[in-house]
Image (cartoon, rainbow, N blue to C red; front, side, top):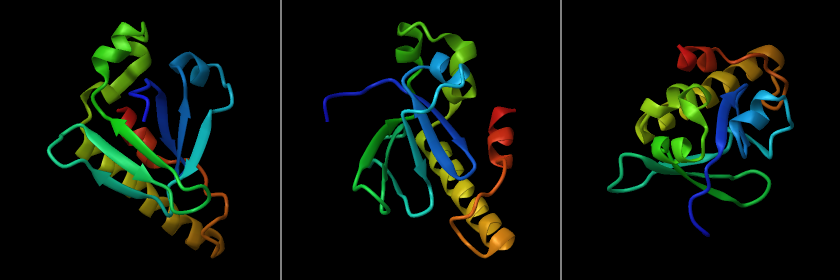
Length: 132
C-alpha cells in the first residue's frame, strides 16, 4: 500500500461507491469504483478503533484498507464539515455494523423481490438512517 488516500464513500443499494472528492460525488460524476457488498468480508484491525478492511470475494481479488476517523485529513484537504457529513463521528465498529446491515437488508430484499440475489433492489433505508 502506498499510504492513505482520502476518498468520499457512500453506502447505498447494497453497494459501496467511492469518488476522489465530495465534489465529484455531488456533481453526479460516475464513481471511481462501485463494489457490491454481497460476498465481501469485513474485518476490524486488531488494536485499532478506527481502521478496518474490506475484502472482495467476487470479481477481482482486492482488499480495501479504510480508516473511519479521517476528519483532520478531510479538513486539511479543504473538504469542510458540510461535505464530510456525519461520517466525522463514526468509528470502525459503526461502519462495520452499517456495512453488514446494508448487505443483509439488500440480500433479503433481492431474494424477496425476484428470487435472484443479483436483481436490482431499490433505495436503501439504511443510508437515510445514517444521514439523520
